[in-house]
Amino acid sequence: MKNNYWLLSFLLLGCFFSSCKKFSYYQINPNLPTQADPSLLLPNVEQIFFSTISVENEFSCRYMVYSESADNGQYYGWTRGTFNYTNLSQVIKMEQEAARVNKPNYKYLSKFFSSYFIVGTTQMFGDVPYSQAEQSLLNNNFSAAALHPVYDKQEAIYLQVLNDLKLASDSLSASGGLINNDLIYGGNITQWKKAINSYYLRVLMSLSLHANDPTLNIAQRFNEIVSNPAKYPLFESNADNAQLQYYDIAGSRYPYFNSSEAKIYYLMDNSFVQLLKGLNDPRLFVYGAPTINATSAGLTPTDFNAYNGVQGSAVISVIQQQQSSGNVSQINSRYYFEPANEPSVLMGYSELQFLLSEAVIRGWITGDANSYYIAGITAAMQFSDYSFPAAQGVPYTGPLYSDNDIQTYLSQPAIPLKAGTEIQQIITQKYISMFMNTGLQPFFENLRTGFPVFDVAGAGIINQVNGVNAVPKRWMYPIDEIGNNAVNVNNAIKSQYPNGDNINGVMWLLQPQ
Image (cartoon, rainbow, N blue to C red):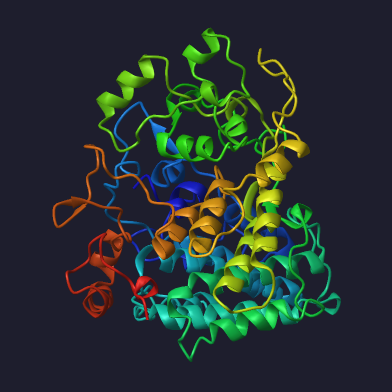
């Protein structure tokens, strides 16, 4: 399935619950090492989990349009996903090695990575195996029973994640030893605490429809973090972003550098273009490119009239016809000409500010919601104000908007929060900020809040509910589970989805309390 960011972003082969060789095979294979210092495992784990950039997500989130052929993500025609527990096994191996050599800080980083993994997985499917699967990996138990794990309830998964993240933040310390080979923060423990605490707030906000759940105590947990910055530091600027940098070095370049498809077939979705144009948002200049017709007419790259999108939900023949007319913007050339480009962000400072703003609106914390919101927009625009030197015949143009332009944008009457539309405004700005980053987070935010409204009006849309085009709510369980863990997966389906395992089933997370 093209829209599976665990499968497509991480690009790891194999599966834990399948006919593939089990992880135990690699532990006993005489040609492979069975022990390694956790510092040697950390870079690979970081590259897996911080690789959040996938153009497939952009199609599903209505940022961009694919014009070569019909794309299931674009047309909401996906069916089954993939668990990819191989990713989790890498993290558990690092935790095992941390215990073996008594380097506990790697154990607490493992808690963060395993939490990030399972949150993304449960958001895709609903109930999934976790506690038994995790224990089987930790204990090297690959018995028949261990390979057929029961499914944890989604609420129980979130409760464990919250506890694990809290443990990780509370326990990371200088006494836990140096963190070597760290690609993200260079071993800085305070920076990791900021990342874990900020991500903890994201997880809490993802539970907003269950804010009154007495077991989760969402508002209390949120306030506990925000009200004690000495113990629970949070991101303070873009410099704190949890992100993976790219470099002009083989194996470390931007994912779409020199991509032939990007140069030809990656177009801007009209709904996104119109959103940016309606707000006079100069990020359009660094996200997209002027149309061929606009360039021929002499319009500059900073003229909003130079940009136009195409309806991503239209049938592919219509999209191709409009592209050939020269009146559709492609993705900005920097995404395929610049080898370094923007970093891959797992979570950033701007998102934290939007979370704090929403938390104030929901009454979880005190503060000025508009100030947090404006700080989020400012940080997002500063992050995206990207320019790159001349490369492969593309002239250097310098920054396409300035700090003054950011202030002009913020001073527009349409920007400050307004009573009754605060959540919509916050989520819309968060959505704009996540272009070509953060994986499927904008999609999950749409499912949680309904904002922004994703276009499904075109004739290309495959998924329907009661005969009406619709955005799917989830992915169906992997085919491997149907064959290898049938009893448990069928029990999970029956307990969650009355209409069976389909992409329109509404998981517990999305059911208002």
